[in-house]
Image (cartoon, rainbow, N blue to C red; front, side, top):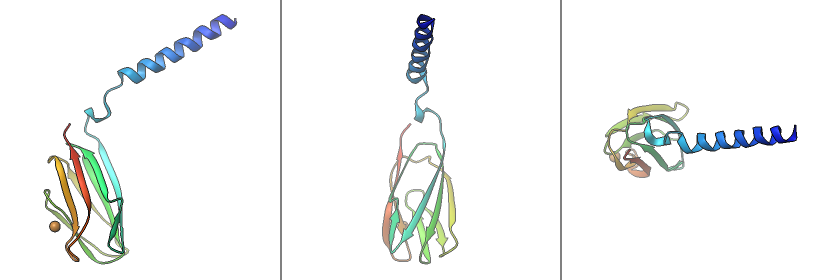
Length: 117
Ligand SMILES: [Cu+2]
């Protein structure tokens, strides 16, 4: 009885290990990624967004002041007003590091990092 329990436990551990070893690389398949970006007093939190090439990205942006959110490289702009968060949707088809900036204050807020797949 004890022996078969040990055997079952061993098999469970082995299968668990196999699952870990054989599971697909997390970055192998494009994913849906959503980030909540909050801008307060000219600082954005988080100030870095990191995704993989071809991920489908949603930036949900809120700000305590009216602003013009700009993602360089992708050249997307979005007006944000206090109390009215807005979303930016895009496919991360350009790799590299891109500045995110407030054109209202011409302030760098953070960086979008897109890693090659
Ligand atoms: Cu800009």
